[in-house]
Image (cartoon, rainbow, N blue to C red; front, side, top):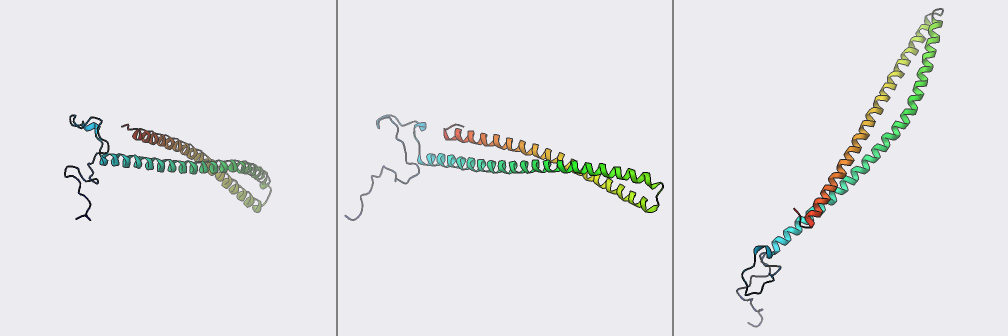
Length: 180
């Protein structure tokens, strides 16, 4: 019998019981029973800690994702801007080529009245090349306009994500401080 540890009194709950009080009310033991708001139980405290931990992890993940999306948006925007700058130079070159070809076509058309059929086929080839170059210029211009729209949309998305992250951070701060 001496090998067994002493048994706790029958009125005390076991220490692992989830309803064991963590904080005792300030009133003396002879006072009336404590008000429910003055008693904090382990299960309530654990639940609050779990909730706070969840929001902290959620906020961290959201902030990390927003940062990654922001970096991707910046890379895409810079790439689009660089492409637009490079395309504008090639557009000017294409326009000069078109003008040059148009002048060649005009001079060939004036000579074609006195030339044979071979010259007429050359004029026809040059005219088709001019048409193709004009189509390429139109395609490049429309691509540049679409890229500008995409950059604007990406900037709007980054702004929206930033405001959402700010809202999540505020919600975390309120949850951590015991707010709603």
